[in-house]
Image (cartoon, rainbow, N blue to C red; front, top):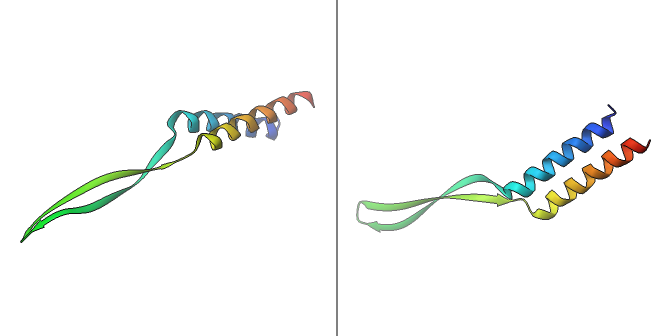
Length: 73
C-alpha cells in the first residue's frame, strides 16, 4: 500500500475518534471554596479541552479524499 493510503486511513480513524469523543480530559483544577480558621474546603474539578467537530470533520474528509485519489492513480 502506498504511503498516501496509510495516511488516509489514519486520518479517517482520527476523524471518527474526534467526532465520537469531542474532547479529552487534560487537567484538574483545585478551587478553595471556604476557609473557616484552620478548616479549608476545597473542590477539585476535571476540565476538558474540546476538539471541535470541525477538526474531526476535516480529518475525515481529508482521509477520504486521500483514499479516493490514491485508488485512481
